[in-house]
Image (cartoon, rainbow, N blue to C red; front, side, top):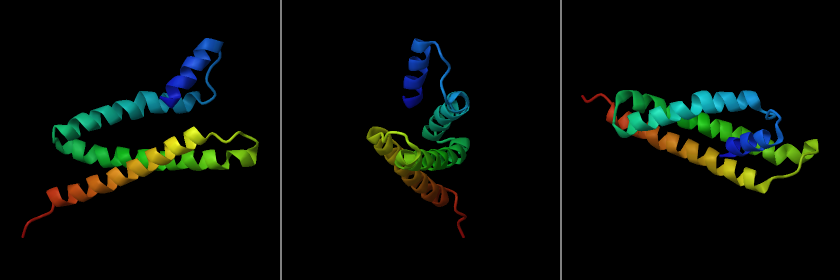
Length: 114
């Protein structure tokens, strides 16, 4: 949704968004991969078990970097956006927490039995 707001704003002003390469990577690769991984995971397909932890870890680390960038933005003359800071704190913590849960589930499902 954050990217969508930037895209709509840029269309309204007739200018390209400032972070167009990030938008392309997220909207063309990450979001479709997220949807495919979620569907495969919910259908209990092995590829879903493999994709979902990777996607969640990516979401957690990306959210952490944007969160820290938001916290440090006043040091570089940018305004502090509390909504973005809280949003990406939740995204990063949620992504990493669910990645941990999924990885622990993965170990239990596929552990060899002796």
